[in-house]
Amino acid sequence: MTIRRYILAINMNVYESHILFLLIVLICSITQSCKRELPIFKPSDFNAQLVDKSVISGKEEHRVKDFSLINQNGFEITQKDYEGKIYVTDFFFATCLGICPIMTGNMAKIQEEYINDSDIMFLSISVTPEIDSISILKDYANSQGVIDSKWNLTTGNKRHIYKLARESYFAVLEKGDGGPQDFIHTPNFILIDKKKRIRGVYDGTRQDEIVRLISDINVLKK
Image (cartoon, rainbow, N blue to C red; front, top):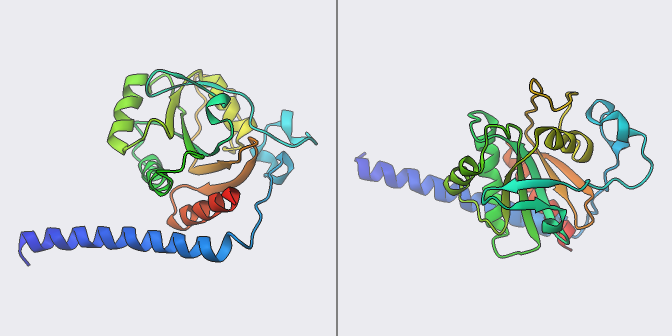
């Protein structure tokens, strides 16, 4: 096989994989979205180890707490930027060579799926905010095809971020105080509805979970 034919074969495989992914999403959306309702997650729905003790006994409907973060363009990002939106959150760091590139690639696929839908947004929060400066996040965003109007890559105060991860998004199992030695690393994508409630948790490294997440977003949209 010539080099040219080899390259064409690779490109065709990538193209076919993308088409297959879109077909699976479409089939799942058609067959599932009309039949299901998503749960509204409460602290008690999670493993007790996954939920901070300060919120696990709460009986009221759980909602993501207010936050203040800085995005890849140096702008403050708060709940107001996601008001009336369905969004997906994850926790990452720009220098990660393990699960983060896979997660970011999968988040980019979801972004592409809803490229023209202003109701769907994304929020990635750095777990190494002391390293992930605005300029680093901007370079990372550019390299990953992040669309500024849809997807915020954010940094901020570490204790604030780790408190959000544990008490708002229930994203991690390990306990900690957000101090210098504290570190969290999770593959979870968390789906948030327009009322700031958790409606699903997914493994952001798995294609079948990404398909399920897209299907669930479509359920929320209906």
